[in-house]
Length: 247
Image (cartoon, rainbow, N blue to C red; front, side, top):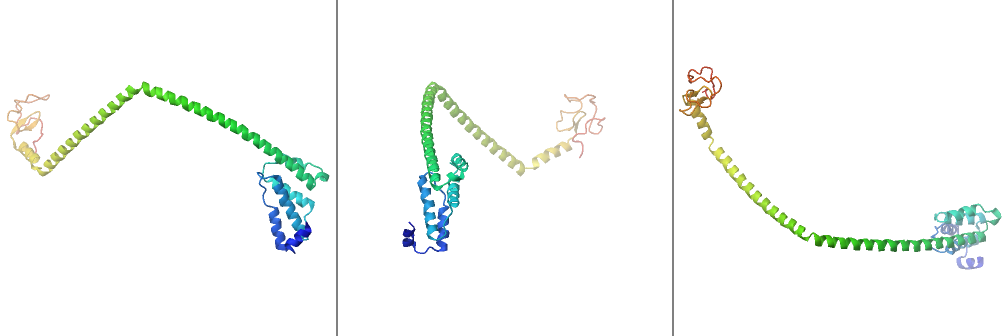
């Protein structure tokens, strides 16, 4: 093997040795056979030896062990390896130990996949049955409530018609109110003239003050207040109302 490396690469430079060390540390993909990791480690060992920088047995085992531990899938096998006697911690024993662990892991995953598939099929069947039952119940409910739904639709249409009529009425009232307010703004004198007439009349009622009606005086008032004085006039109010009496 060393002769092959010499023939292939010639003299191995320090830079190439560093690259070789980095390749040796590449993470292991546990979905691949364990031999993939073993080949990675052994190739790096061979190149290091060819470059006169060999790894010790402890370095080789430590590198391989750490790459397997980092996967997080071999906790128990790693603990078992740590508890082995130093004499048993050889590269060949390492490969045998973790090859067996990898095989058991694959078997557990296959079992879990089959179990998961069975569970998924059961869930799917249950969902299909529930969906079928729900669809049947929905169909029955739809048929039973057809008349009720029709009534609701008709009632909704009637309500919408009433709402439209109400909107139209409101619009008419708003237009009339706008017209009235405009008219009041354009003819402000009407109110003032009415007030002027009320302050120039000479008819007076003790209960209601100055009036615009000659038939509404203190003597003729039909809605008299308590203490009403029939003899009260505008000139002699006799303590009566002074409403509209200020000029």
